[in-house]
Length: 253
Picture 1 (cartoon, rainbow, N blue to C red):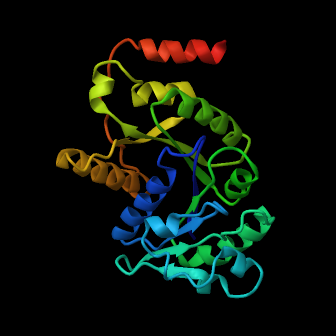
Picture 2 (tube, one colour; picture 1 turned 90 degrees about the horizontal axis):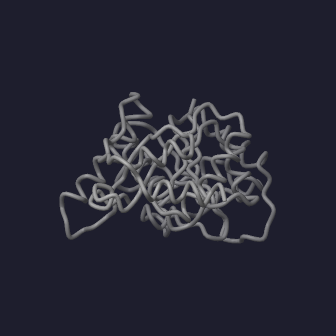
């Protein structure tokens, strides 16, 4: 039976969909049967990130409304044979109930190991629809004050659901900034949000091969966390934290 994990964030632009796609790829490369389900109606792009946008014939709404069976709506990845995509509908103004989506995913769950649900950013209707279909959650943020403020709101909302686990991914981490004390450490962010730190992903910079390799390693370890319970990527720590204090003061203001 598939574990249903929603990947969410407080604001857009923090790399939530990229985290979702890369986690799906790494889980599939480990031999797991994985569905990446896009529930970001209207702004859906998980199929684009995974490079299968031209292969989708049906989407999740087609499965809900009976135009196809749930398995017919899945797109098999041409490179990773155990990775499947369930595209969302490009019309954003239609109402899709959480119950209807959950029924489709429950129909698929017995044949798969993981269902990753790409949620819309924020805490609007789409967020609640996505979280209501999940058993676990992964909150993605970056070490920026605006992102963390929004992540704090989402973390509070997630606690109102009966989720078995809520993890935290700190994305786009600049280790040089952390070491100089110019940004929060992932550990400080974890303590601030009262969430377990699951993974630390460095900022992508294709000019530096070491950074690209470290990002790939981060996603491999994130997948290993879910399959084997392995520890996440270690991050550079620093003492003190003027920026952390500044954020905390602003939050309490």
